Image (cartoon, rainbow, N blue to C red; front, top):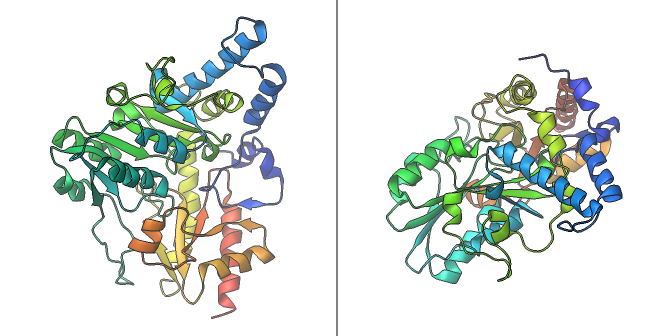
Length: 414
C-alpha cells in the first residue's frame, strides 16, 4: 500500500480550505472538487432532457449513462440493477410499494437500524396484513455498565426467526451510530440457505464511504447508499439484483418499459446533473477496481484506523467518564470511524453546544434517525449520544486537537 498523503488528498476537497473541522461526516461528507466541476459543466453545456436526436440531448444522454455505468461499477453490479433517487429513505419507501406480498407472508426487520430501513417495512406489514418479526440483538454487557452498549446483528439470532413464510429480511451493513460492521455475507448465506426465495435488503449508507462494496460477493438482493456521504452530491442509489427484480412490480407509467430496476422504481425525470457527476467519485476512489493497486480503499481504511484508534484510546482510558456505544475496539475489521459516546454528568446536547461555541469542531448530538436503537434499545434520553464521525480527509492533528478541547471542557466540571 502506497503512503497516504492526507494533505495532498485534502486539496481535492474545496471545503477543507475553510477553517471548519468536519467531524460530522456520517451526516454528510465533503464533496470532491471534480464533482462540483462536473455538475457545473453539465448545467452549462448539457442541461436538456435526454433521449432526443439533437447534439446537446445526445450529450446529456451520454453523460447520464456514464453516471449509471460508474454507479454500477462502484457496487460490482450491472447497469440494469441500479436506480437513483433523492434519498435512501425515498428509495426504500418506493421499494416497499413494489413488493406484492400476500397476507400470511412474513418479514424480519432489524430493531437497531436507521428509521429509513424500518418505517417502510412496518407500513408494508400493516398495509398488506403481513407478519412483522423483530430481529433484536442479544444484550452484550460492558464491564463498566449493566446496559447493552454494543448490540450486534448476528446470524445466530436471525435463524430462529426464519421460516418458509419469510419473504424479506432487512438490516444495516454498519450502524450510523455505533460504527459497528455486520457480517452481511454470513447474514445473506443464513437467509438464502433457510429460504432460497427470501430477499435481503441492506442499508449501506454508513458503510459505503469507508469500504468497498461488492454486492455479488455479499449475496444481497437489495443494497442502498447515499452519494452525498461518499464525497458526492445529494442523490441516492439502490441496487436490486435481477433475481430480486423478478419479485417486483413496476411503479412506472403503464406505457413505459419495466425491464430494469430504474424502470420499476425511479419516478419522473431523475437528477441528471447529479447522476452524471458520479464518475469522478469512482475514478477518485477506485479508477480500475477496488482491488487494483491504484485503489484508494486500502489507504482510506488504514488512515481512518489511525484516526479512530486515537479517539478510542482516549475514551477507553477513562471508563468512569465515558461510555462508548458500539465497538470499543479500534480494529477496522469490526468498526468504522463513527464513534458515539456519552459523558458522565453531561447532557449530550449541552456538551456539544458548549464545545462548538468555543472551537471550530463540527460534530453532533442526538439519535440520528436511529431512534429505535438509541431510545428503545440503548435507553438514552432525548439528547442521545455524542457522535464524532471521521473521514479519511481528517488529520490526526484534528483528532488530537478535538480530544484536547473535549478534555478541557469536561475537566472544568470534574
